[in-house]
Image 1: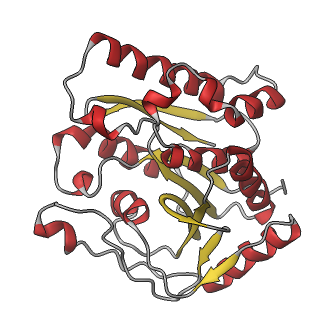
Image 2: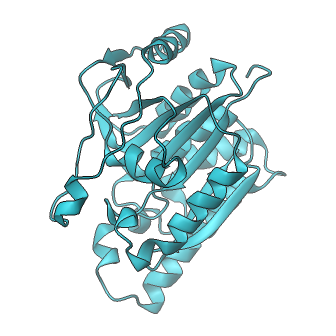
Image 3: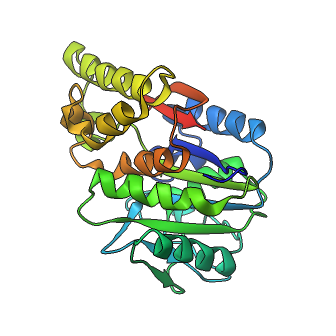
Length: 266
């Protein structure tokens, strides 16, 4: 990495638009995003890797004024009237593509795609004025953890401490479990995986080769597939780690929809 390292944050973004609708199951999430936002210097631009966008190759939004994608279903009408008119940043999008090219990663720019709720829901809490330019990057189909760490490593070449890079996912994402009564077993599985994730991301005594190996082989973690039947909400964390390349400086434990979750700041 260069001398001007961007700030990096992996956040758990909750269920659809519920954090913006006053849902009590998201009160800790809202409080913690407000707290984390207050501890970060106001960024010049924000790059978001969202769990809600997958492409064959990394794809980067490059519109000057991206629209919003209401990529959720069955919520109140107010959910589809949410506005977040932040500008895009085409020059930053091109810079990201150049960094990918230098790392041998094929990518493309997309002038048509708007911002999904993995971007506008947390940022409406963190940056309510919508006055910071944003660029969104897709995950890659196949969801290979090593590929996503490599994407993050390429982004680390940005060499700009004014940037904020956000991995927008959810450290626990078993949709069925959110709607089932909690049992002793389900709580224990949730907590065991979270403890493994916290140790993996925050232990300063862990060698980086071990940390990388744990993240690449995350399926071997306790109850990994219970917590992530599909890993698209975990992999933004791998991108974040690829950028930072070290243990996080701070982590937050919280409950979202009555499930233990976590967020990580570098």
